[in-house]
Image 1 (tube, rainbow, N blue to C red):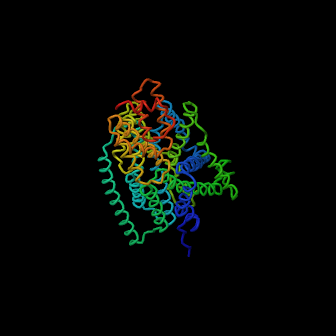
Image 2 (cartoon, rainbow, N blue to C red):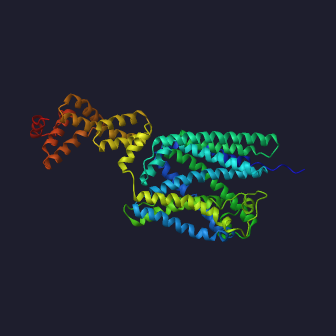
Image 3 (tube, rainbow, N blue to C red):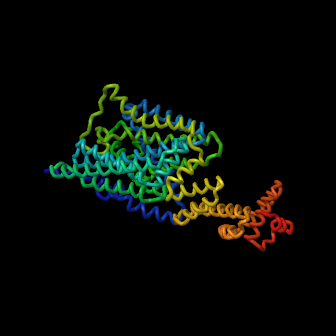
Length: 529
């Protein structure tokens, strides 16, 4: 009697270590790293060495597999040229890649959920489960839960709308976002119930099930939810899931190419060399990935066309990675299944209808070209200024510290210092733990207090001005020195009234300040409101 097939891809412990259990190591590792480095530093390192670096294995697969390259030669040659031209056009035309950043983020969400779905298909195949309904319901489970992680995350929705407005998009009523959340939540419940009912029926009918797949989906979807909807810090959340995603991807590419080298004599020389049965080559493989990712550390030259083109190239690398992975890893095809150690699969048809050959690729390109065309038009005809977008986001996200900080900046720039004080106090009361954000909030509070205090002095409300100015002094011990210097500059411009007002503020902040000359003191005391 034949022994039952293993439900694992590599074996229990290696699957748990590489595909299912990484969150148990990632979360404490990132939390420990935050004690030593800022969230921005961790994000820069991971997104460079991981997010950018893991594009390289996909390129190795696309260009190192002769049969695959010959099959998709037109796409593999033209796609990089088109995407580079697209990103360069956005960068050179508007000196901003906000539209590309938005597109890559949304494509990245799709890429992440489809990788999860792909692993689910592998685990089903290991158990001999090939039902199309199971595959469709698994895909929809990934779609609704990954989408919910974004929609119900304040920081992610703020990021999406911020980039949309920076790309020239019109203001979106936040009520529309709330309606979308309600509809998506209902859809998520409906799909989840359908998935559970199908799972129960399949078990009752004795259809093959892989319990490892269920654990994998629970871990992956749960970790995505934690990284998005639970972790408030956008950068930290991106780092958490990016590490998980990269570990899975690097491992499966290594496994696939190792088997290709062992079973297929047509693989290229580079692939045959790198993916030999030598443990030391794993370090070389990871080193090449990190070396490619290190390209993002190349310093940019402000205003340089070369730097803009280089940044556009890195952005094109991201889009190219997403595009390649949409067709080079089809688990249902026999060559891919052989490389993954799976039986069965569809043979690659040598011929087919024009619609069959070009219809699906056309839909993939439409998912990029149509929104890119809209964003190109909207960036040329912006609906909101930067100030207006800050105000809109601040009103829409009253509990998100970054949005509120930007709202305080808007209020300071539009003669509402008292409003800036209220908003800055609210941000500091949130106790975000983000040192950089809290520093900016204190700056907004300080200038809001100073501006409100000066306004009160100008209208003769000295008693109301004094506590505000002294609180501002508590936030910045060098405030009096700065105000003295500003007063001197006002005097040089001939604005003696403004200079006297600033001197009066200094007398309140530092009544014994010796930097003020007798003439300045007399000016401060003798000039009325």
